[in-house]
Length: 208
Image (cartoon, rainbow, N blue to C red; front, side):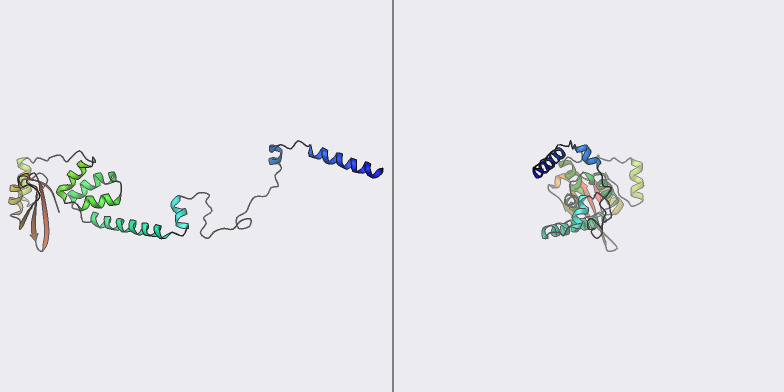
C-alpha cells in the first residue's frame, strides 16, 4: 500500500511540473551568459577580416571559379586592356567627344566599337543611337580663320580650301560614299608620321 501511495505522489509531482507556465519570454530571459567565440565554437577561415558583411565580388573571389567564370574574367580583362589602349591614342578633339558620352555606353565592347570608327563617323553613330543630338556646326570668323591658317593649324568647321592653305595638298584623298556628300579623309605625311583629317559635308569634323 505504501508503495502505491509513493508512486501516486511521484506522478502528481511530475504532472504539476509539466503544467508550469513556460512562455517564450521567460525562456529567452534564462541566459547562460555564454556567447559563441570565433576559433573556439566555430572555425575561422584564412583571410577572414571579422566583418559580418561582404560584397558579392568578395564572396566570388573566395570561391574557386569554374572554367566558364575564368573564361569570362579573361575576356573582360582583355576588353579593358584594349579600351585603355584605344583611349590613349585619341586626339584632343576625339577625346573631348568621347569623354562627354562614354558613360552613356552600356559596356566596354560598345566603347571599343565606337573608338574603332573613323572620327568622321562617330558623331553620326552617337546620333543614330540616341546618345547625342548631333554635333553643332562651328563657324569661324574671318579673324579666327586667318589666325589658324597663319599658325599652320586646323580646327573644326574649316573648309577643304582652308586646310589646303594651312597644311598644303594631302598625299592621298579617300572618299566615303557618294563624292557629292564631300565625306573624305585626307592623308598627310610629316617626318615619317602619318596624319589624317576627316571631312563631313566638306567641313573638318576631326583629325588624328
